[in-house]
Image 1: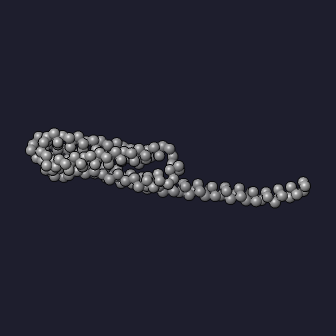
Image 2: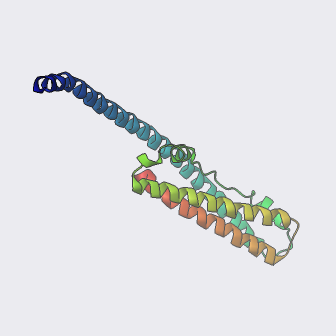
Image 3: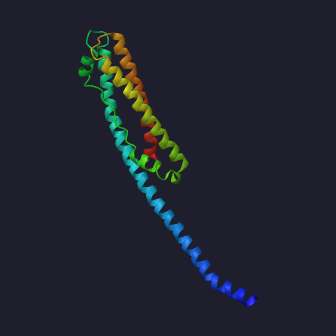
Amino acid sequence: MKKNTLQFIREMLPVFTGILIALFVNNWNEERKNEEYLDKIYINIKKELTETHKEILKKEKLQKKLLDTLNNYLNNKNTLFEVLTKGDGIYLPNIRMNSWKAISNSKLELLDYKKLIDLSNIEEGKELFKLKSNMLANFTYSNMNSHEKEKKEVFKILLKDVTSTQKGLKMRIEKIIDE
C-alpha cells in the first residue's frame, strides 16, 4: 500500500507542478496585459484632457469678451440677441472623457483609487457643466428678444455660473495633466 501511495505521489508531483507553473504564467500574462491596457488608457485620457484644457483656454477668452460686451450693453435698449451678436455669441468647450468611459464600463477595478476619484470628479463636473449649459441655452432662447436689464443680468449670472463650473473642471484637468 505504501508503495502504491509513493508511486502515485511521484506520478502526480510533475502534474501538480505543471499546473502551478501554468497558473503562474497565466497570472503573469494577465497582469502584463492589464498593465499595457492601463498604460494605453492613461495615455488616451491625458491626450483627451490636454485637448479639452486647450479648448477651455480658447473659450475662456471668448467668454470674457461676451461678458465685457454684456456689461457695456447692460443698460441700453439692445435685445439680448443683439448683445450676443456684438459679443460674437456663446462659446462653451467640449469636455472629452471617452477613454474614461471605456475603462469605467469595463475594467474599473484596475485603476488606482486616487486616479479613480480624480477622473470620476471630472465626469461629475462635466455633467454639472452640461446641466448648467443647458439652463443657459434654455434661458437664452426664451429671452432672445428681451431688452430688459433684468433679463440681461440673469443671463450674466447664468453665464458666470457656467464659467465657474468650467473653471473648476479646468483645475481638476490641470491636476491630472501635471501628474
